[in-house]
Length: 156
Image (tube, rainbow, N blue to C red):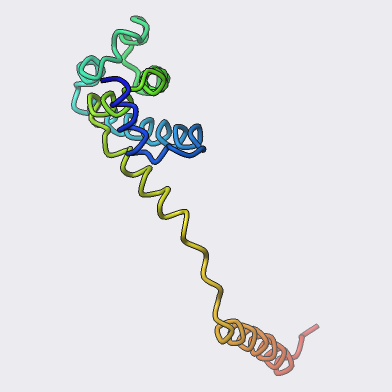
């Protein structure tokens, strides 16, 4: 089952050819941002510690930090624990299953969409007419400014 899961993960992520670490960095970044957003919501509802327990992150965070219930400290620690768990899941071949467990499965599909969009899209060249128009407008603005300065005399 592990080999099939890894093959499915690689297929979903498009990881059959190089760039594995770059894609993993993208996944880690998105997961960290998503976790911080959700932690902020749970904090303002008064359910932050319960939420961390639900995700399985509470057990790996120091008790003194949990007792203080400081949102910033908990976010820092939780992101580190989540990153460690994502790396472990990727190494063991169950990344997709782990992200499904922590309800962040959409990160895989967002990463895949970003990869496919970035490959074939080149920046369009600006039309020559628009560049000519910008140059003409810029030159006109300079001439207008010079005419306005000639109309006014400097009072000394």
